[in-house]
Image (tube, rainbow over all chains, first blue to last red; front, side, top):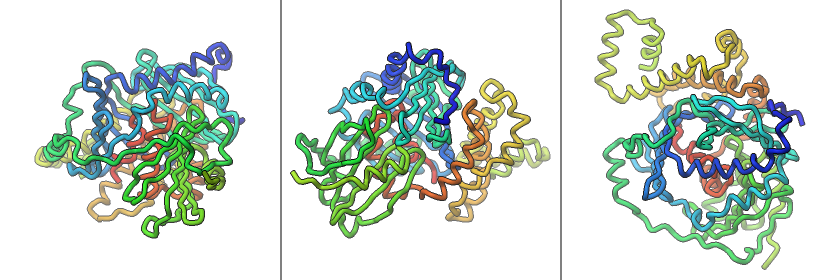
Length: 317
Length: 159
């Protein structure tokens, strides 16, 4: 392992459990805290600057995300409902589909975390004016990425996250440049700026979205070469893009990274055999098995999505 | 417009030019966002508390040694009108990449550029089609648990 993350190894062992619990705290903070700030996301030469506003009230979570460079785009999220606007025009609406069915997703994942990563406390830092604790997650093999996360020492809000490969190369990072945490966030930020956007938002839920069907039994599709420590956390049939038939979507997790396997009929219109592509730490790989398109997505190295994708087969019910 | 913002901020404009430009800024509210973004990034770059101590000395060197700046603007502008905007955006991106590489601190920052260039050659950026899968995946990914906006960062990126 060639990583040099400035890890305070002296603190490593006694805090293991506590550091793993950190993810729970960060997850809670991400959903329950009011904040507004500007963050930068960088992956290779790709740099994106966005402003995020997150407010929680009796009706739940409200979030607004605006891209600050280039064409004006923004996203409004009201709990599970998401509207995306481009220069004031609604371009897309979606609903986060079955999240509510899995409120206990995270604790279950955390139990597997330490089997796959060495979790260590690292040096404290200051980010966007907030005192931050940091934790390093070093993978036990090269089939997943290393991560370092910084969280506000008071609220637990994630202030910075870095993903690195096994040579210590930076794959992507996310960091707040400017941030306010607290109850004094101006609610005007979560209302879309342009009047057309407001009008659309007030229409409420415009389309009854097709239902996701969670599968109790196996679909008959099997993944033979998952990296050690990845467990299936759910399997569903979901509507996807314009597909006539629902797509089988399996989700696997090692506690920190996720791998999705999508299985769909390779219709001539949807058939695009693109092989391997990527966006930051996430990689996408697809292949055709007979008349079926298999797509694997995960925040894992390219070789891992290929290994997983090449091992998907229909084993029969 | 962006070049004018840049010139004004750097104090490279004559007084009458500057007045005319500020007038123009008032008449075109859409340029205010550019103005604010430019200042925000400038502010961050100047914040001594959050920027590496040797920022000033090493800034120029790092820019020289920062090949990643070639990468973001490989894509060609669809319209000529966008060209100036891209040019200034690239200056901002370049400054940010430099700033971010310092933010990594004790991690081996100088290798970032090299690695990403290799990666750019090997792996194509996700297509619009692949993006649908990415978003569908991220809805359930553990990393989105601690980072609620993660699935949408790319959706609001003005590309």
